[in-house]
Length: 122
Image (cartoon, rainbow, N blue to C red; front, side, top):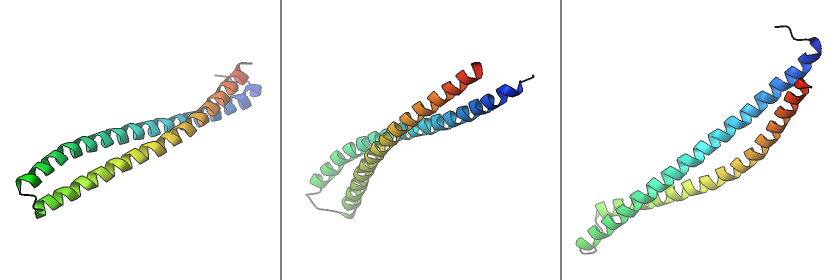
């Protein structure tokens, strides 16, 4: 296809704007995926921790409130899962902030892409 010389700069700007926008959209998609994954992991950890807490307490009572090595290690695992769930929550908050920033950037790159497209058509 023949492209007139006067259109080449506008087409280059369009290609650059498209690439910039697609990169921002990819980053946004990666961030949304990470948020979903962190929320799922948090829910899973909280669910596991809730059922383990009941089991641990029942075993503790059944053993006459004596802390055995098995109960101690079970408690350490429960605390670790609870802390991991909190870390997932914290990560979700940080990623939500990044998502909001990426939305603004995507809006900006989308506007530049539309303007470059309009310039080619004009």
